[in-house]
Image (cartoon, rainbow, N blue to C red; front, side, top):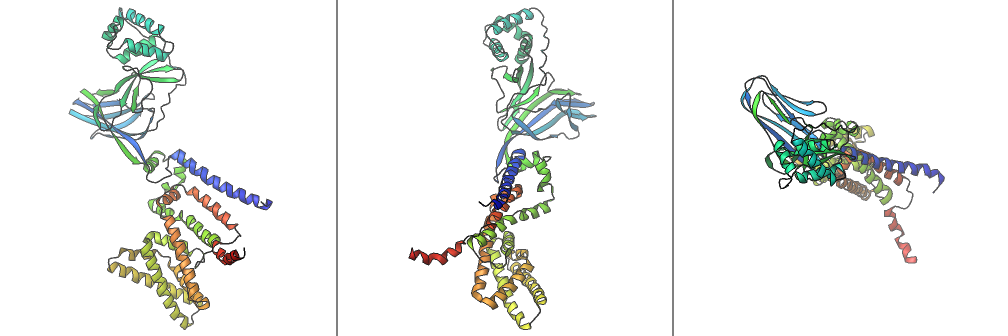
Length: 505
């Protein structure tokens, strides 16, 4: 490698790395999929609140999940005709609030939210270790609690093992009389466990979780317990003793706050319905990461019309790569350097077969008209201008004939670049006069072959997806074009010239 080329290859390598790294960062931070059509499962959870309004001012508050482990909130909304609705932050506790000045009779309120499973069930930690709550018992429950804890602590070494021993003692089949006495005083097993753990010096709090099962209705929240360990808050099922957050458990609320408050109503009831949905990963990414730097600097923020323009524009580098490869490496001759790219873009609008037929008809008629113009001895500028006007007439006639014959493809031929076609006709006509019809067929056929190859590549769904959603990948195409620009060896088509030399080896 010559020393002069080191900066060049370093620049090529930098372009490739920059394209790959930027695409990877966009994928990891905004979750834009690399493949089109990728789907992701989401849970649509609906909370239903039924109550009887008493006729005055009514306020309904419902605890909402706050940073539920293993899930990410995608969107939330409420259906409550006649009610004001807001999501409030009440001491770092998210709560939905419905309000109405006067209402009477049976009422039904809905709150639904879409959650994406993330699979990240890591334990949450507080900045400071939480304080252990003070516990008060009346006699004889105080004595029963001390005896129950003495037995549990003697068989445990950690807060988690203490909780497990207590759950065994509090199970319905336990013969322990102290446990039976405490359950009579405190029927809620989770609240009783929280009190016993705090008495044992372990910070604990109640929690409510919702088990997600597809197409289930009228589900209720399950009482859980969270206790603080060295790794953070540990969720434990107060009935089964299961530790950790199951994949299908949505942790709905934490702490002692009531999950539902109804002011101005009675006989309130809270139930949940859920359904598992599958949504496109691309749409999910655009909803979640609208404020991400990649989304803000991307084309998604532009109007749809401009986005459509960029969708075609980002395909041009691939067409240029095909042209450079076919001319520099293969050695194919074309009519005009980058005319095949424009033809392939027109094919994207017209589809391949109608586009090929239209292009051949327009150029064929154009050559006949150009042959007549040569007898008029016009100046070059006037001749080209005349050709442009004639090409416009040809395209208009083909479009009208196609429409009258019921062929919608006839209208789409207007996507052909008229001025470029006029120049191509002029160039082919001169080529015909100077080098004959054979050379016209070679260059015209070469242009169509390159245009077809570029069209086939640019019409691939995965190519459209990558070029539009990861435009930085065009840096890699630029690097490849620069590399081919340095190629000075034999072209593939020239190898035929040396075929006869094999006979002398």
